[in-house]
Image 1: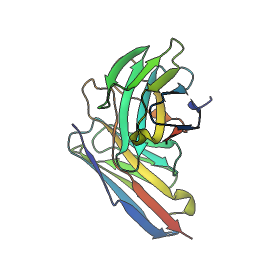
Image 2: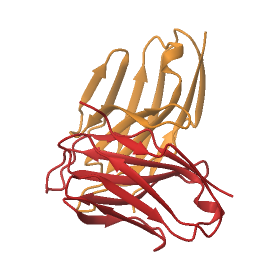
Image 3: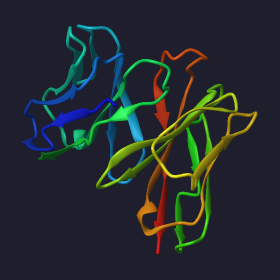
Length: 112
Length: 116
């Protein structure tokens, strides 16, 4: 079965700093999804990547899927307290299993 | 468009009881997935329904079951509750078609189940 490893597990940054979160898959990724979650709440969809080398941006958040389609990175530029939360990557491993496998998440704290 | 809604938001049950959780997907979405989230195991897939058919099921005991209605609303049921079933149960809907190609999954706020 597919496994996703996220790094780091937690991150504390000063407001205004840039940061990167990584998501590495044990198998080829057919679809990679990034979500943000406030503690105890639902997941907020950020971005979906499907093609090797694809890069998408929304406001100050950029996500990339590497060419070999086994790793993705999420980069936040000039972090703000509103970026704080848990970032989760989810993957579709292909086939007909119709499910997403998620990493354990990265807890981001942004200090003002 | 209204988002995914889940009811109830909070539930407290005792061991041995059963519980039913409800999920209303985004209008037009026919795929509904259920996930269990715990601090130790993270987000784990329970099952996925499309047009009233269960297409996949995760590695959970038979006490966990679900169904989908013709209007795409879905329910999940947990019988004979155990302490370890305490978790946040999340529902997600997607506009994905009958093929395996995924569109974005949109999540509801979750139901917090506490088993005493």
